[in-house]
View (cartoon, rainbow, N blue to C red):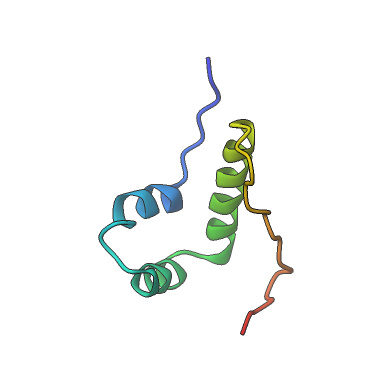
Length: 70
């Protein structure tokens, strides 16, 4: 049986991706979810995408905890 992992963050994004613009989506995600939940969703997404052998997959950039951009 396949190992199924469910991410609430990824479920939310997949349901809202076409309904919200990038700024709205980012605001909701960063307001509602904790940094650890967002990082876990990102890791799961890249792990599963890596199994698909997709060419030119973006790199998974891991930032130090508390690092900010801008």
